[in-house]
Image: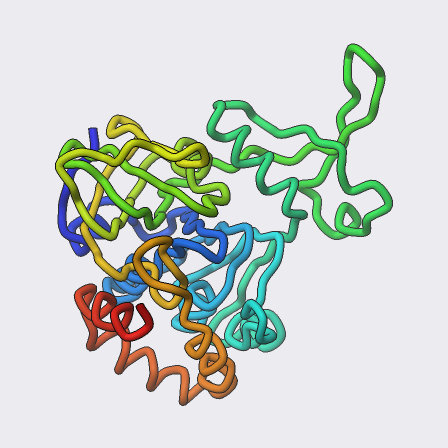
Length: 282
């Protein structure tokens, strides 16, 4: 059953040094506030997993919290490269970063396999692709019924998954609507999970056709963090801050500028600041 706690408590109780950590969100509902709390608490040696790592993982990599990352695309959406990620891969700054690259389809299927407690995912993919040449975790398997050769990848089973959602009720049931990506599968595949939400309500709204409700028994901790997805967007609450994504390109290019930004906007900030930022673009 989910415990409703502060974000500080949720991270302290559920994220441990050396963990495999998934922070999912596809343009929508990216858990920035939770990621910043991970940085503030000095968590280290994390193996990061995410289908589309963007600015949040650039920040985690740049502060040296990550020892590796499994992903299917990495960049600053609509802007360009992730400069802290690139610096780590090319120059090992601030530390060596192990990387494992997959396709979107493989990552999504691997999360589903993890959620189903299966050892691997099979898919029709990687045909004619070069990734299997450099990624030893892309194998092939022959269907025992048809003889068809399929791609196979290990199931993703994070130690902890962190997501942001729209609402939770007081029992810890969580509602996601809009673009939900693989948040549901990532939570169900994990040993522990943290969900930050825009608000906690007495009862969840009647779900729309594309909504997802994560039951309280599938979630470890829920934290009320209004604005917790900023600068990404939360449907019905605030839009994406395109200006921030553009500004990040310049901030992240320079190591000293990056460290100054982290000190001022993460280490000296609090989860409550996210609500203030989100109101500026709402």
